[in-house]
Image 1: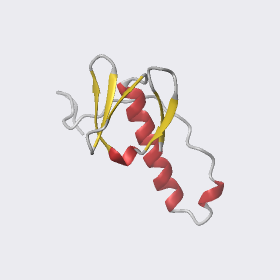
Image 2 (image 1 turned 90 degrees about the horizontal axis):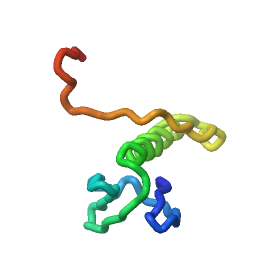
Image 3 (image 1 turned 45 degrees about the vertical axis):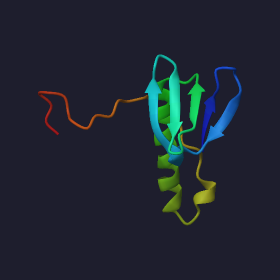
Length: 91
């Protein structure tokens, strides 16, 4: 689950596995696979970072026998993901 904030200021938890897409129009709209939409105050990059951190924590904890004692994953700077590298950059 990731923590998001409605524009009214209330915080809620959202199952990140149900996110279909996130739009920035200019407010951030999170659309779930069932069509439910949430208007949130976090930016597009903040939502991406929250989802990546959530999934990284699951992977990190799943492979260790004593996973319950792992410290929480610290936030990292937001990065943009691209399907195609920019011109002039070789992978």
